[in-house]
Length: 407
Image (cartoon, rainbow, N blue to C red; front, top):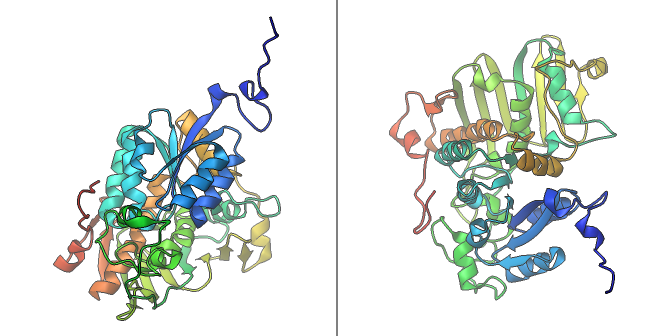
């Protein structure tokens, strides 16, 4: 009898865990950002990618071939598989929460690219379903795990602010890249790679509109109101997330939002840009404008500015203060993707929690509501409801979904 020879994959090694320890992953959306997340996941020892879904045939089949997994045109086939532990969602914005909720209902963890929901109502529903099902949620705010020169720079900046390096914070400045007008409104043939069925799935719960050459591009994903609220959330989620991580100012009292912005009246793109928001977080002033990608905490002793590419301060000595180690020390990871997989396996809370995602994303929605209704918006962050709301403000907390899609 010939000797039994087992492949090394049965036992695992330094780069691949044995099958009994692996966390199986389904990837939903593998375009630009989804492709990046797929590649990052392949480097995580505990992760095993087994399924891929994308509306574009070439994308799903190409990526599935790399991981030797199954390709699906319909993400629901991944959700239905009971041999998949979690999903990584990198779809257009309007699909984030509906797919995440579907995953949580089948006890699958979800890594969800930012921003969170298309509406506040979606955010609230998402948090409720994940809590009920006790599964892991990781938000795509990777800067919480980002290392620079061997230092978790965003973590360090937020930790120093929290332990009082700048004294009591009275003002926070947040900048995020701007949007703009444009985009073709001329109907065009749906590409063969997408197809009519793929386009119908791409639109999903959003109102059905004619295909144009710009609708399914990244700009369309972020700059068309049926599918997004623009960079107020699409990029604002990054520096606003740092605001939440570095302080609890948004929980210190009612949030009062007012400001201005431009809404294009021609072209395909119709989300707010050139915004100028003045926000009260209890007794803390938050100034939110287009710009780079930064969060500056200003206090009695100076300021610390947190950026993904390195921190700065009014006095460089502020950045040399030793971080405090106690029960209030912020948790951080050194790999956002490995942290998610470990939390799926261990049923723990990842570094970018759903609670924090809801907090920051709701602020973006309050800004959108304030600009579009040309009014002052008041929000109770604890009860998660509007205060003294007008009918126009209340109407913007939710949107109808195109049949047959529901939460």
